[in-house]
Structure formats: C-alpha cells, structure tokens
Length: 254
Ligand code: SF4
Ligand code: SF4
Image (cartoon, rainbow, N blue to C red; front, side):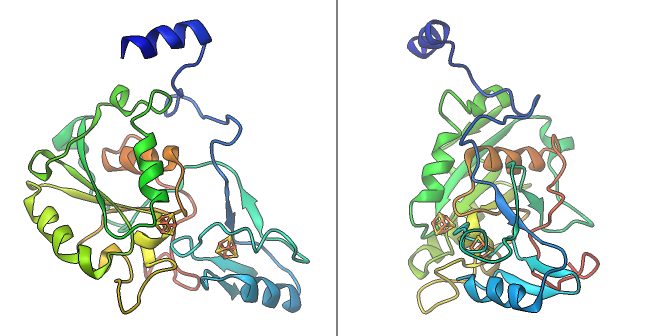
C-alpha cells in the first residue's frame, strides 16, 4: 500500500473524487441509451429490430428502453437513421421498490461489508466489480469493505443470470448473511437474465431466486456505477432518474 501512496505522490495519479464531486474522466463510462422522443414509424421499427435483447419498445412519444435488458451494444446508436439519445454518466443504479426502498442507513451508519457472488456471469461484470478495490476507485475511503465470508457481510453483490449450477450456492450464501441484509444485482444478466436467461440453463436474473433491493444496469456496469449502487444502499446518493423498468411499465405499477 505504501508503494501505491508513493507512486501517487510521484505521478500525481489519485483516487476519483466521486461521490463528493462528479467524475468525467475520459473512458470512465460508455454511457447508455435512454428513451427518445418523436420519430418516424420506420425509424422506430429500425431501432426495435436492431436491438438484440428486446430492450427497445415503441411508446407514445417514440421509444422506451428497458435498462435492465440493455447490453450496450450500440446498435441503436450506430448505422441507424435516427439514433437513440445516448446519455453520458454512470449513476445508473435504482431501487427495485421505489415506493419503499430498503435502505440500511439508520442501522449501518456509513459502512458496509460486501460479499461478491458470480452467479454465472461471463467474467466482465466481476472484472468491473473487482476494480472498485483498486487505488483509483478505492472503496475503503467510503467505508466499504469486501469480505470473503457471507457471515460477515451486510450486502450481497451478485452478477450473472443465476445459472442452474449456481442456484444452490447462491441461496446458501444469501441465507448465511445475517439480517438485515441487502442484495445488489449488477449487470443486465443479474437484472433480467440478459443474453443468457431465461433459458434451459439459467434463470431470468437474480429476482427469480432471491429478493433484490438495488439494480445496477449495464453490460458490464462501469466501476463507478457499481459504487453508485452501494451508495444507494446506505442512502448516500439518490437513485438514477432513469429507472431500469421495462418499456410500458408505468412508475405507479412498478
Ligand atoms: S444499446 Fe441497448 S437498447 Fe440499444 S440496441 Fe443495444 S441492447 Fe438495445
Ligand atoms: S451483464 Fe454483460 S458483462 Fe455482465 S455477466 Fe452479463 S453478459 Fe457479462
């Protein structure tokens, strides 16, 4: 650790100032498509047809995007007549239950212990999740710590659609967490099954198997989006203004 501090002093490289200040460093996030207003029927059909995960659906004003299914393939942005609006930033996380979000702030103050579970992810989500422990993202400065044992954890951070092989280990891990506990689903696979589920070998995401409190969309979500999800658990940041609900699913019915 001392080497990292010395290197930081020598090179001027330092940890991100998020969440105290926004981070707009180049490459910090790929951005994401959001719903777009009026366009021709042909343009809507083109966008809907281009989307490989059925994340786009027509609505009254143009298109709506189910953030839980979007895999950030850019097929609604490149090579189309009217591209979808692309939003920069990374504060993508949202509570599953907007009306009664389950937060840990009062009980846990500002500190969390986190247990990761790979429930059949392709590797990219877990790779991004591991980055939050590196010197740039430096989750310890936020009072967040990764623990290898579920019995010491407050939060279960899960990637992947929940493959059949991981269903039982995931349930056992969830049961081993002491209560109160919270679950954060990261990535399109954990949020909706993504490109793998539902299928003969995987569930349609984490909510099919255990209760989920916070969803972090993305494929994979960048490290700062994952940090945003953890900050939501302790109410230190507001949720995304673009809720990852399905097109046509109203705020009231969510
Ligand atoms: S970026 Fe998302 S919404 Fe756009 S085509 Fe790809 S999966 Fe669909
Ligand atoms: S959401 Fe994307 S990056 Fe994450 S496990 Fe699924 S396919 Fe891989």
